[in-house]
Image (cartoon, rainbow, N blue to C red; front, top):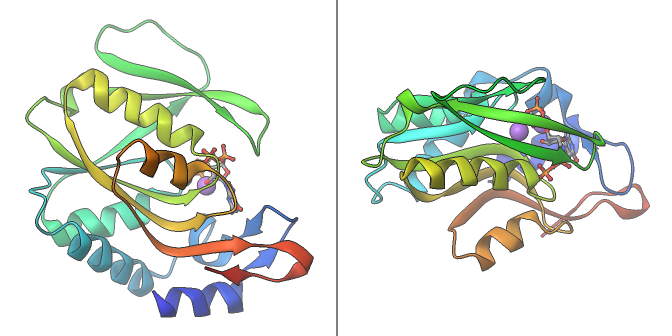
Length: 189
Ligand code: G4P
Ligand code: NA
Ligand code: NA
């Protein structure tokens, strides 16, 4: 998605060799027009998959996931993050480590919102190592719903997340792939 590459060039900044600050377009401020274009792009790529729901993880996955769900005309479910784990028979919970934040968090989805009849499109904003994605995929598996594929706004392809998921046979579609952030410059794939 050329326009997104351009916006990343204009409005992001490199924090380190592996972290790109994208607060102006993804993590703190969003451009609704640009976000809707992301939604159209994901919806097009999965148009023939019979998607019944879009799913993401709060918080930064929500805008692009919402846009995609709107275009497909299906509900959006967002997994919630909980600090403490309360045993609850009505929810699926997975503990996920965060490489960048150096801690673990629990993500949860109410059983009410996932059924074995669902065909899910998982949308996320950024994929790094894919730990959060793997957590949500475990929840999807437990629910018996089918995962049609994943749409990622920005894939950092120098980290293993996207590749690992593709190796598992999951269709992963990224709008932009970043091959490197070395030497203070953004290299797109
Ligand atoms: P992983 O799930 O792919 O392994 O990624 P990791 O644990 O490293 O990521 C933890 C959080 O940091 C995620 O946000 C992820 O989107 C974000 N992140 C990872 N790499 C980058 C980066 O280069 N730039 C930015 N801006 N964010 C990055 P989160 O915990 O899900 O929080 P939220 O933003 O959804 O609230
Ligand atoms: Na994030
Ligand atoms: Na995210």
